[in-house]
Amino acid sequence: MVKSITLCADDYGQNTAISQAIIALLKEKRLSAVSCMTTAPEWPAHARELAIFKDQTDIGVHFNLTEGKPLSSAFIALYGSSFPSLFTLLKKCYLRQLDPTVVYAELNAQLDQFISSMGRLPDFIDGHQHVHQFPIIREATLALYAERLRDHFCYVRSVYDPKAWLRIRENAYIKQLIIQLCGAHEFKKQLIQRNIPHNSSFSGIYNFAPAAAYAQLFPRFLQQSENRGLIMCHPGLSQSQNKDEIKAARALEYDYFQSEQFVAACLQHHVIIKRFSF
Image (tube, rainbow, N blue to C red):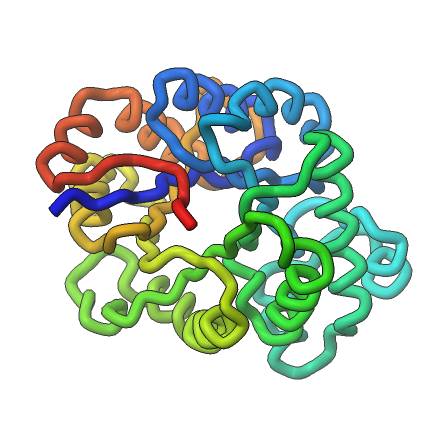
């Protein structure tokens, strides 16, 4: 059976090395979705180049609450001019110390920034470091979807993986479990209850440190994926001068997706890389 998989490159706009790598892969038709970090200072300039691919690629918003600076005055007034760390944000969510109206304002500002640069609504939404599934943030995400995206052909990324608990021998097992424990099942349930289109499976999680093994990891992601599933990736060019903790991994991912190994793996696992189908 042939499987249709959405291969989504995250963090477009974060820096030039990431954006250029994604554009190069789009030209080779190696990706089928791109998630955009609209809070990044370089985003507006990079958006123009990405817009060329709007008819062949799903282009979405990568909601960011942990890196760089917020866009909304409401968020800045209450929490300062820089986003908190991932740990601090997660703690605030579970202790109910995060104001939902402020989160909603920030998500709206990031969506507005996307529309301003791209001239249209996104094809999908998700979250940088999967923050869109955290308590409080997920309610704000779902409210924004109902208010502004419900009548548009827009899907939402689910990171729920019911078999994550069984992958004890796999790379980044603890990381996978933490992601699942941070609201993945509840968010998936909400998407189903609200009849919101979403991917059937999710893969692509690994420990970025041993990135040299990516050529061995990716075929496993293909094998794990269901039809209409989604695999996230993080390609980037090797000459990046930016302070990016995973830039070495990004370069290795980029090289892999440019290679014939990637094409052969898709053929071997009977996978077609396509846009999400409703």
